[in-house]
Length: 168
Image (cartoon, rainbow, N blue to C red; front, side):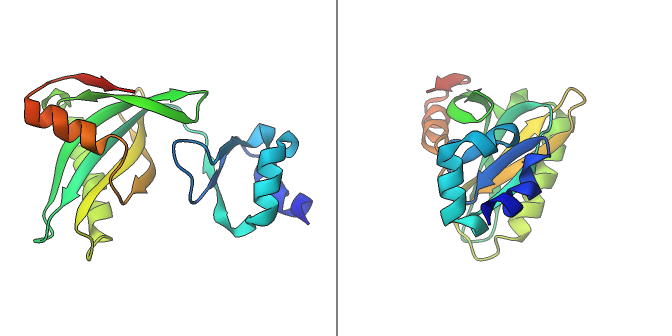
């Protein structure tokens, strides 16, 4: 029954996410799932498509990457995500990579290297969403192995030499 399966999620602080969601529209807060008809309908139909994401403090960011045919990965974008209601992506504030501290950049590069090792046969754009806490620790949320919503705006501002821009 749905009730038994929901026990895995409902007493934990965080989010229940659908594997094929986008922009936060497949994300539900664990404290709200029992009363949310949309969630219960989706969960009942697609039980194996859900996972739990623990709540972590921090500000949401993303990086944009490109892996070329020689397996070289280039980080070409960094943005602070604009999130509404703790789950809906509504835009991003794009910043130059040179504004990132060396310490943070090394951490980001380390995360990218881990993901790159799993993308051996992939050529193209991809991104990683993560949180940065007050001590500059990174908590990875997800990797998007595709053109993300910020990829094209980032490519445009980079080609125009613009340092900062907001995309909504």
